[in-house]
Image 1 (cartoon, rainbow, N blue to C red):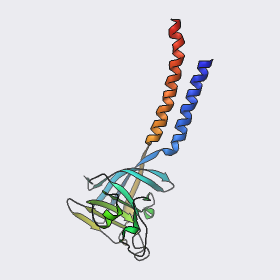
Image 2: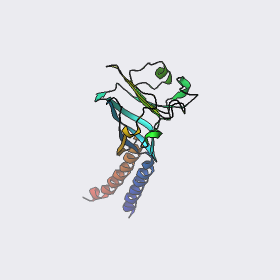
Image 3: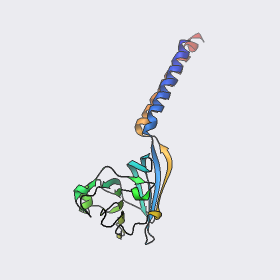
Length: 204
């Protein structure tokens, strides 16, 4: 009876660990954007979805016409400080939003995590959709720079095409803390079964 209780307790602990970790699940997303030139940026990332928006962007891969960006890649965000701001104060290494609603996008995907490096062009690959210029142009801007082969695609935000944006959720991915909780829960189960089997071995 005591052993059965131990097993049930272990199962309960494992269930609680897994349930508590569900909020830590990230999801893998695929994205693509087709410029008016016919050039296509595509890739994937992990993040946490809330409504139409995805935040906590990580594990990014990106491709221009099938050729991979050099990495590792980071995600930054843009905050308007006066029209058409190009100052470091407008960019942040946090707060990026990639959205199912193409007009909610506010992200820069590039191979640096430093706003200073972005402003001084100390990077080789970048793709961004940001609300650049505020009301001056009236919408987001989509731009990409890829070196090599030195492909620069630049439109002011009057040329951003929301219909050419695609975002798809692929699968949930447990974060490391969730994996740790699951393993600990299964360890409890294994320990309980091991203790249960010892009396049977002695009797034999």
